[in-house]
Length: 189
Image (cartoon, rainbow, N blue to C red; front, side, top):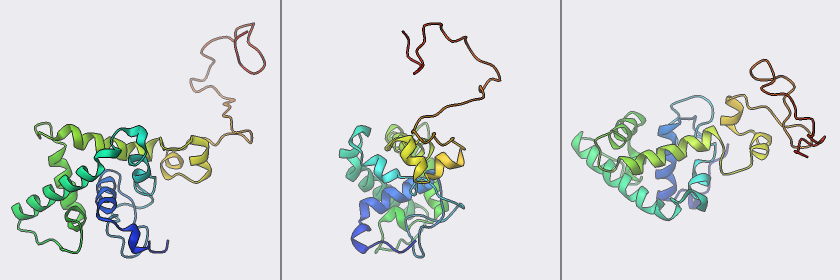
């Protein structure tokens, strides 16, 4: 994948991408990708649309994303000072941490006794949600576009008409008999 334009590398976005990549790691999108650490093969939360999901107003966190990025930077600076780490000043502080240090910091922020735990767990849940369910887009569109999480989980593709039909029952048997007044479209009479 070609490098993104410098205008796309704003500190808030790269900080949130680095957080999402810490939750569901993926491979670097291009050489020199600093937000995605490349700690795992295949696509992770960032490639699955974590930023798009976070910026979707339905999440309820969109207005606070600047604060999330700022606080994460503050915590990263404190963490670096505590561990005697020198951060690259040209990068947002959390992005400047190695994957191992990002993971340790996120573990600390999401610990049961951390006073901000609820905020960081919420951000982690949305990072997982981007990968696990592609909640920010329709399932059919996500599968058609090759959404990495849905494909990794083996979500079946819909039929040509966009509907899912399952000829085999997941429990190996029907759960109930079809009501005699059910219409051909599956609606109750």
